[in-house]
Each structure stands twice: as C-alpha cells, then as structure tokens.
Image (cartoon, rainbow, N blue to C red; front, side, top):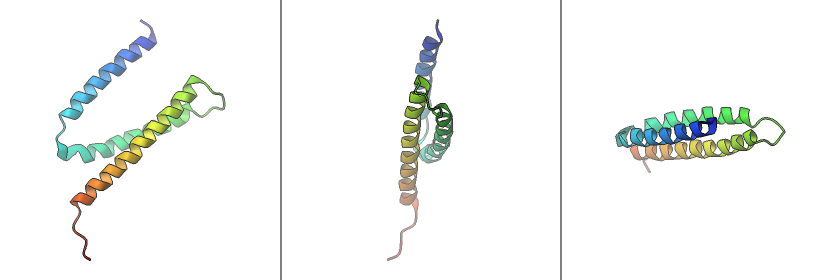
Length: 95
C-alpha cells in the first residue's frame, strides 16, 4: 500500500472517530470544547503558514493556502458562536 492510500484510510477513520466523539458530548460542554478547537485551529494556521511560505507554487503551497483559509473560517466562526452563547448567558443590561 502506498502512503496516499494509508493517508486516506487514516483520514476516513479519523472522521468516524470524530463524529462518534462529538455526538457523545453533552450540549453544555460545546462552548468550552469550541474554545479548544479554536486553539487547535490556531496551531493549524501556524503549520499551514510554514507549509505555504516558499515563492514556488507547489502542491504543498496550494494545500497550505487552503488549510489557512479553512482554519481561519473555523477560528472566526468559533469565536462568533462562542460570543453569541456568552451573550445569551450574560445578565440583562439596564436601560
């Protein structure tokens, strides 16, 4: 088996494990877990920046650029949802 096929198997297995883990999490823990996911996405951004740093256009650069885009969407969306949830639990503002 080639490295690409092993990578695909690992990716599919990780997807199944991730779905099973997320489905078992109670709703009250989603906000703290989202904060942790934002931290992991921050690490992904750093790794993708290191991957896409050269001036030559290679497959590594293209994949690094795509990873930067997806990780930034995840971070911004996660912080937006966390902010909305924290506002829901915040006290009422006086007029």
